[in-house]
Image 1 (cartoon, one colour):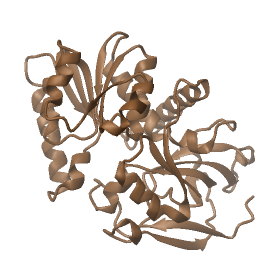
Image 2 (cartoon, helix red, strand yellow):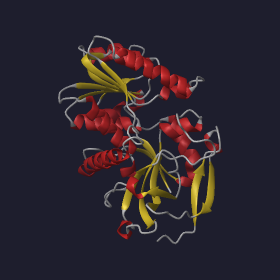
Image 3 (tube, one colour):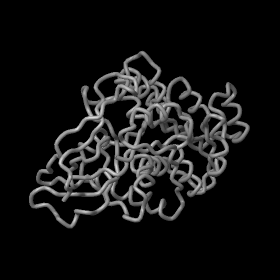
Image 4 (cartoon, helix red, strand yellow):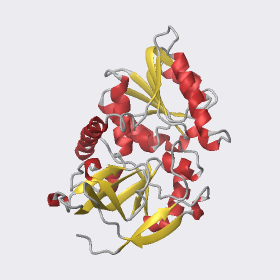
Amino acid sequence: MTTDTMITEVVLPGVVEPDGLRLHRRAMPVPNRGQALVEVEATGISYAEQSMRRNLYPGQPKFPFVPGYDLVGTVRSVGPDGDDSLIGTRVAAVTKTGAWASHLVVDVDDLPPVPADLDPAEAETVVVNGVTAWQLLRGAELRAGQTILVHGANGGVGTVLVQLGRHLGLRVIGTAAAKHHDALRALGVEPLDYRDPDLAARVRELSPGGVDAVFDPVAGPGVRTSYDLLAPGGKLVVYGNASALGSATSIVWVFVKLLARLYTWNALPNGHRAGFYNFWAGRLTRPTAFRRRLRTDLGTVLDLLRQGVIVPQIAARYPLTEVSAAMVFAETRSRAGKVVLEP
């Protein structure tokens, strides 16, 4: 049992600049039946929180709320009639919100295990990001020797995706700012500058017949170019809409237009496939299957992390109390990987 009586959490009060994030103290929550109290050891800053700060993330809660998409931590107590053997075990959780806190109550069924010998911050880099990357590649049904194009290859998902791609025997072309190219080369990536006005031509120089899959977290106007770069039978997978961060248009309308475009392309007789990846697919309609898939896929990527197949890409570590500075750093994208908060 934890001996603390208070927790610290970060509150997003509204549409604010990073220095508008607020630290809040409140009484330690008590888990109910089927729940556990988790002491958070590592959480992170992702595109989701950057969007929520601007009120641009689909389905985000009403202000004020505590952000934080995922976490790694240790179970400190369980609810009535709970399994006491869970106390002291390291776990992960995908929360969508709420993880930017020193402690959090989570349903026991939503706590896949994390090996105790892994560094919590390193494990945190593959909770949502690693599972996303693994599911993206598996869904694309690729074969060793094929070529993929990864936009945002320096990002939290991108850095895991390119490593998994290389592990599976794929040739990986990755776009990022030039300052990240050396780091990407070290991961086995052929880097291109995403700001190059002749980017499409550069891709075609490297892969004249097109690429077998494009993974795009940005969407926006460039999504058409991504589609046009596909080889016969190729797949375009959009898994984010980062371009909307700078848009004054309703995020819902932007997303609807994107989906309409992707599904319209699927009706074309060229054999290409296009789709949008949703991490949460099946969470409400098939919760047991969703949890089983998350547990299995997270176990896979954690094992690859332990083996050294995945080298964790941590852009920076900040204490939770310095979340404003951490958010500023994350939004500069000055270093590849994920910014981790350590309560």
